[in-house]
Length: 102
Image 1: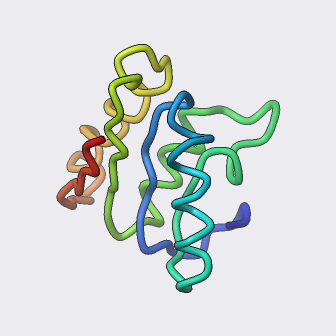
Image 2: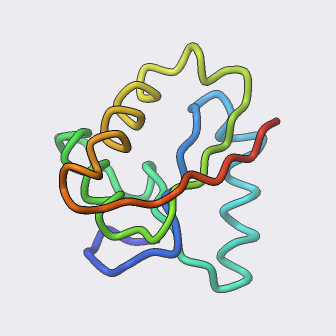
């Protein structure tokens, strides 16, 4: 995916510890199928405000998909994702999370 404001099918939320083993292979399969998604490593550049970019990703995404590996408890960004998700109703956006529990 690229850094732009086009809509995405979903926002892919995950722990960095799950990225190599689960998230990158999943993202490659999604690309092959033409499914668009927001993924942090493609959308957040060095120097960007993480919170601003996450909020933008949620704004342009139709749904929120969680990759819930056990490592999420140790992920510093998990709280950023969760706060951003919880604030979406205040911005007039609501969607149900879809979780992939691993």
